[in-house]
Amino acid sequence: MSDHGLEAAKRQIGRRRDEVPTPALLLDLPKARRNIAEMANRMAGVPAALRPHVKIHKNPGLARMQIAAGAVGLTTATVWEAAAMVEAGHASILIANQVVGPIKVAELARIAGLAQVIVAVESLYNAQELSEAAVTAGSQIDVLVEIDVGLHRAGVRGAEAALALGREIARLPGLRLQGVLGYEGHCMLEPDRAVRVQKTLAANAALIALADLFDREGLDTTIVAAGGFGTWDITGANQRITEIHAGSYIFNDAFHRNLMPGFETALTVAATVTSSTGDSAVVDCGRKSIGIDRAVPEIVGDAAKIKFDHGEYAIHEEHVVLTLRESAALKVGDRVELVPGYSPTTVNLYDIYYVVEDDRVIDVWPIEARYGRTTAGIDPS
Ligand SMILES: Cc1ncc(COP(=O)(O)O)c(C=O)c1O
Image (cartoon, rainbow, N blue to C red; front, side):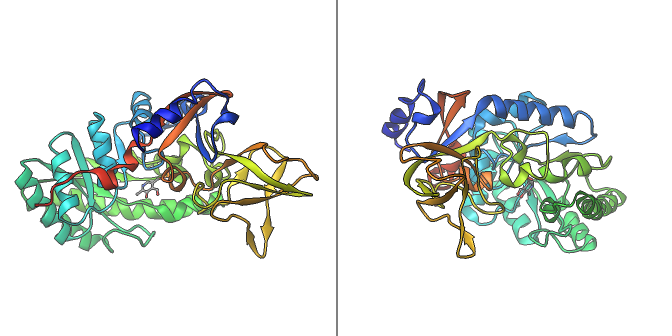
């Protein structure tokens, strides 16, 4: 966002939350703070530490609040998110993903000279390029071997192959093997709690089996990492798992609020009614301003629901069509707020949060880690 755009947004500070131009991303700060405190409180009851995933909010200030509440570091999905957190002064970042290719690997090696940077590795090719980059940069990159524990996304298939990779990594200069990672993402989607528990225990067992193999060979297992919001209490209760990477608790979007009670919804998209006819209305947000994957967005209050039409929810690029509770329940110019289906893919659509407390805009915060993708400024030569 240009400085001009940011200045314009800042002029909204002090106004009511229903006055900002729409669509707008509203961060309810007291609710987010209470969610951070609630998670810290819950984590105090399990052996694992919390290293919250910040792809959800992409904001170093919110990350600082999570660290102040006891988090041991941060988790990111990309090297650019990690760079934004390091530039803002954060000291320990896990990139729970593969970082492949010379420019991204060089950036990782650079920031590893400024903070502890840990990365998940699942191939020897990648381990070697990381090693070379760390040697060139004169830094040390911490590494976890990622194993597939059932999500079938990334991760080495099978404990023996993961052990073999661990052995290789332990020999590579510039890298420090720190342990293992096995993300049970396939369990987060499971609405039936009993099934979620059963699937998570199986996934955790696969990760622990690898940690045991590492121990037997004398390979480092300082970190045994897994977990998300949907499994924090199951994975976090495991004595062998040192840290979990829950992140969605901070906003508690539509997808998560039905899975994990006790947290508040701290992120909404504000929209304005642009059309109202009988029991139908239209608001000025859509696929370009609200994440609709994983769950359908929900309208705050009971005036309307998102229309289900032609076999799908009526969410277009710049229009959401509503079915009103009663005719004219919403008029042109009225405001509504929507809870995103999924927070990370909503936040990624915006430059700024309007930070609100009760019904007032109290600040405007840039979504810093979003910029990294294009402004990392790496010189590939
Ligand atoms: C590797 C990894 N760890 C942890 C998480 C946790 O996120 P959440 O809090 O949304 O469950 C994610 C989310 O996609 C992830 O990809």
